[in-house]
Length: 114
Length: 118
Image 1: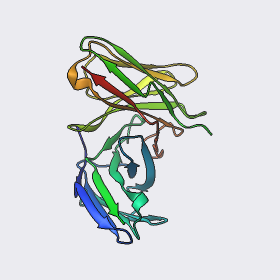
Image 2: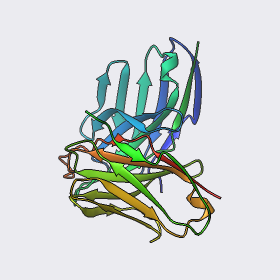
Image 3: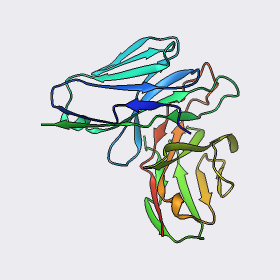
Image 4: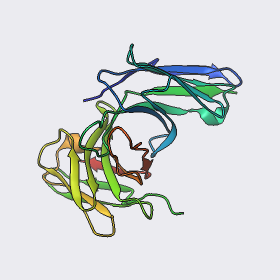
């Protein structure tokens, strides 16, 4: 089952504009991560935010986390055509027992047009 | 540093057959996870191996199995294939062992093995 729902499901913007996508999840988490996937290939890790952090930046990416609302947002500023991809949030709820078991959201398909 | 390598990249099987997929993690990564991706169900966790032991398992039937070797390479097997098993199977490796609460389980994914069941 999927932990997160993302919206919008699809987003189309012009190059240079900002893109914002949102993720909601259901249970308490240790951290939340965002991944990008190009055309049905493997996923690439973008950024991680821990449950005790509220905002994090990496280059043109800005992630926020609101644990009280169980939600996160990913902002891509000054988008480029190369940003066209699907974006997934993934939650890590491994508080006990350890191990890697990320639960992925439904994804947002971003299209950046020239 | 070589990335995560998955073989084969594409394969076609018929119902009832079985399939074995292989994954070579990044050198030094001891955790290997497997995910199934389909248009209908999205990305679903299959299982995770660490030091040759299955540490986590998702909600898949027993037809789905895996193992990890001493060199951290992993294989997953699907027996008695069904049409619904058609999917992109993704392998991911991680350096952090995942200590829960202190570890950060950042995954590096391979390009995937696309399985079509006819």
